[in-house]
Length: 179
Image (tube, rainbow, N blue to C red; front, side, top):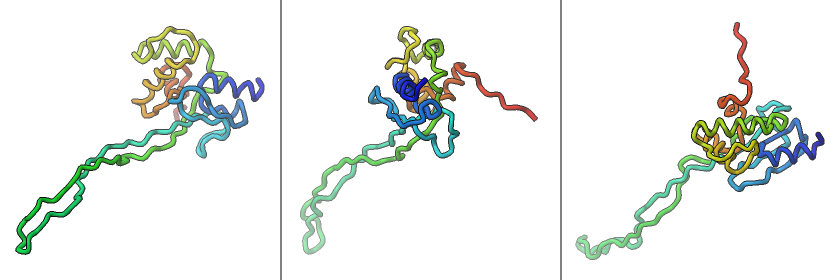
């Protein structure tokens, strides 16, 4: 598979980063809600030759209401209140938790087969996240279901992480060797 073909396959399948397959830099296109993905370098603590995704976590923002003094109270010479203070309510957004960038390991292009995608759709259907037909293709409904499945696990992304794929039973989970 050529570098260009591998990059195109990654982009079309919605895979995040495929450094081993492409060796170049390609931006993922597709849904506006999909994470930004790169195909060039793994994260600083990542292993080259694996496929990586990058998703941005949105900041947690809350709306705060504040009473702002527009005009102070009018006081008489003897210190008694002559006029009430004039105030107004202002609202502003406050960042409670800043946004962040998360790298995660994904499946590589050669691991994303129509049979595995069909298994993904069935696994997500059983868990109540997918209600579409089992087509073996990665479409918008499947990405939305992946996002719905992964968000409670701490990853808000429509790109399937390797950890989620293992949890769904779609790839072999490595067994740690005993003493």
